[in-house]
Image (cartoon, rainbow, N blue to C red; front, side, top):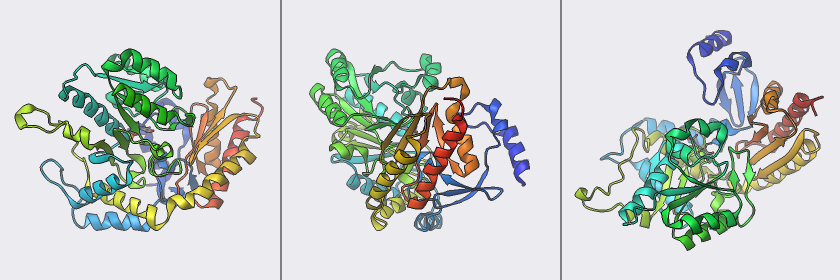
Length: 428
Ligand code: PLP
C-alpha cells in the first residue's frame, strides 16, 4: 500500500493511545516501515532519530543482530507456551539473570507483559502478603504526587497525574499521596497512617511521565529507612529507570537501596517485545506458601506471562550489556548530552529548565498558554528536521537508545534546539 492509502486507512480504523483522535488526521504522522540502530525510516524513506527510544524502551538500537538472532532461534523452538502448569528454558534462565542483576534480596521473578501490569502485580502482592501475615488492616498505599505507574486501574490508583487520572477517580481505590522528594512529608504520613499502610510506591530518582522531575540526592535512601522504621514495604517502579537509563543498571543502585518489590518492563527486552517482571524478596514469596485449601496462592497471571520469544529477547539484551560494555560506553555520552544541552538548548529564551539524569532528559518550556500546545508544536518541528521527540505538556523529553552514536546524539540535541527555537519564535 502507498503511504497516502495507509494514512487514510489509519484514520479510518485505528484509535491511537493518548491521542485526541479529532486532531490526529491533521498531524500527517510518519508511518514507520523499518528501523536500524537509533534511526527510524518511514514508508517514504525519510529518516528520523529515535529520540525517545520508541517510548523509552529501546536500549541497544533497532535490529540489533544479537537480539534478532535470539528471537529467530527461539522461534524455531516454540513461540509461546503458558507458564500455568508448565515452564520453559528462556523464562528460567532470564529469572536467574534478573535475580543476579537486581539489588540484593530480590530473589523471585513474576512475569507479566507491561509496566502497568508489573505495578498492578506488586500492589496486589503487597496487599495479599499483609493479609496472609495476619495484618489485614494494612490495605493502603502511599504514593508520590505526580506519580505515573501505568494505566490499569490499580496502577492509576497509585498515580497522581490529574490530566490522565482524575477522570477515573470513582473507579479507583484511595491512596495516600505525599509530595515527592520530601522525606519529612512521608514521615508525617507514615507516623499518622503507618499501621494501615501496606507499601510505599515510588519511581526511584526520576518521575518520568511527570516531566522528568528529579528527586534530591538521599531521598530514596530516606524512603527506604522510613519504610523500615514503620514496618511497611517499599515498591520501586523501575519501569522507566531500569536497564541503564540513569547510568546504572537500576536507579536504586545509586543509593544502595533494595526494595521489597521491584517492577521492570520497557528496556527489559531491549524494546523488542512486551515483557515485564515484578521481582520480590524471598520473604514476600514465602508469605504465599501454604496448603491448597489455605487459598494463599497468588491468583494472577496473563495469557502471555513469560512469553518465550520475549524472554529470549531479554536474555540477549542483558548479555549485550556485558559484551558491548553498554554502561561503560554510556558514561561519556551522558556527559556529552549534558554539554550539548547546556550549549545549545539552555540559552534559548523559551527554555526554563533542563532536567537530566543519565539518559533521561526533560526540557521545560515556560511562559506559554497550555492551549498553544507548545511542546507538541516542538515535536512537530523536530520531526520535520529528522528526529522523533515527545512532549509531556510543555516538557520536551529526550530519551535516546543507550547505544546511540555520539554524532547522532549531538544531532538530536541540535535538531531539538532548532525545533524549540522555531516553534517558540516570537512567542516569548
Ligand atoms: N511505570 C513507569 C514509571 C512508567 O514510566 C510507565 C510507562 O511510561 C509505566 C509504569 C507503565 O508501563 P507500560 O506503558 O508498559 O504499561
